[in-house]
Amino acid sequence: MRHFLSLYDFTKEEILEILELGIKIKKEAKVKNYIPYLQKQSLGMLFEKSSTRTRISFEVGIHQLGGQGLFLSSNDLQLGRGEPMKDSARVISRMVDMVMIRTFSQDILDEFAAYSKVPIINGLTDKYHPVQLLADYLTMIENGKDKNPIVAYVGDGNNMTHSWMMLAGKLGFELRIATPKGYEPWSEIINDAKMLSQESGAKIIYTNDPKEAVKGADVVTTDTWVSMGQEDEKEKRVKDFEGFIVDADLMSLEKADAIFLHCLPAYRGYEVSEEVFEEHADTIFDEAENRLHAQKGLMVWLNGKK
Ligand code: CP
Ligand code: NVA
Picture 1 (cartoon, protein in one colour):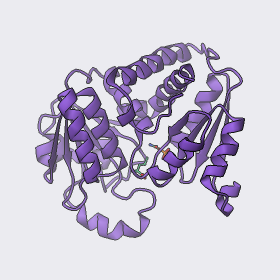
Picture 2 (cartoon, helix red, strand yellow):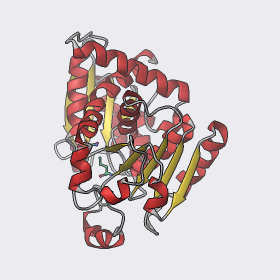
Picture 3 (tube, protein in one colour):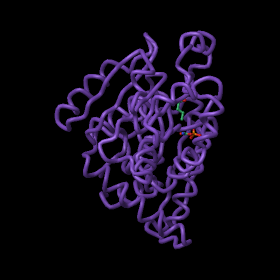
């Protein structure tokens, strides 16, 4: 049985296999050919944080695959009243076929997985957001940006940055990360990414200069400066991230046909300007839709490993 907790645990071939399945299922779904690959299967969807895309894409995704999604908010479960995560894991995983979890620390997710009888999918932790990267890379493939791309990430060294580092480290492309001083990715992830890069030939560059990152890039991406759980730091962060907005000036340094990606939700006037966002809106919303298709590929793939 395989869990999907981090891209670190997957080979390049496996990541591409999941995406190939996603592409195939997307083609079928586009002509309303919803093949019940996961007939009668249930997906528990445990949320300790808010969500629009993750919730909808998993719930609709499992339904289109012939199964059923259960939205489980920690506020409404006994978990919210102190039932231990390991007990919740043992109960939930005896009744459903897969569980997707959005929670705070990766340790909580790992604990759940350790006690689970069924595959666990990371739907975002403070450390990683790997399902988002499946959708992002699928969008890169669809836009012809998967052949030795240069990807520039501008902003906070957060769960999205870490996930990009894992993807680049596995697939072997160039990733340039520009963060303000003090907001660099976690050092343990920098070490892991370095190790992966030695194997794959990836080039991961860290800078505090957004221009250096974006110059000649094929893909430019960013994320909120204030992740879920950091709301109290908003004022300080907005000051510290001055100069890190992805705006038309910065984008003028990219390659002429570069694409801009954003995992959403986007905060215009902070990490991205209204102008850049709207100019690239078609790609950004394709990316959001690709959550559905990529995750259907993932769920079917995981089922095959049971
Ligand atoms: N990108 C993403 O995960 O969006 P949600 O927080 O809306 O699920
Ligand atoms: N970094 C953001 C991603 C949201 C999808 C957060 O963790 O809130």
